[in-house]
Length: 115
Image: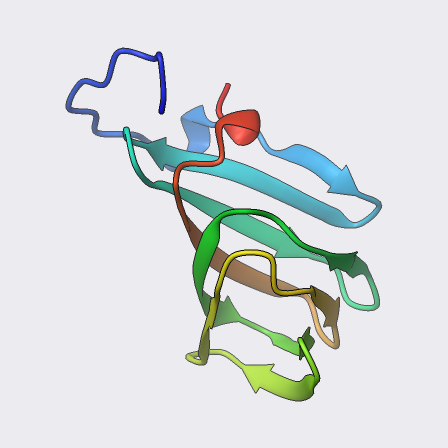
């Protein structure tokens, strides 16, 4: 559980600097509470978030673009408006087919992503 002090927070998008995660992939931690965090992920066309797992449950929404999403044994092309849920420790990878923007919500909060 977090040791940060959680206060009500209204956060302006442009006040949060993007952090490069991988070449062509950046994230902004838009806000974080005690048990959840929300992050904007921008992926340039052709770039990849490599196969990985984490202990967090992840729910996401594709705001813009198209991606190839590999989730466990399933591979599917997703477009703006599509969403996903990834249980803890399930392998997943994302390749941007176009420039893409996604929102990811994690529980518990991704402490390592919080400035």
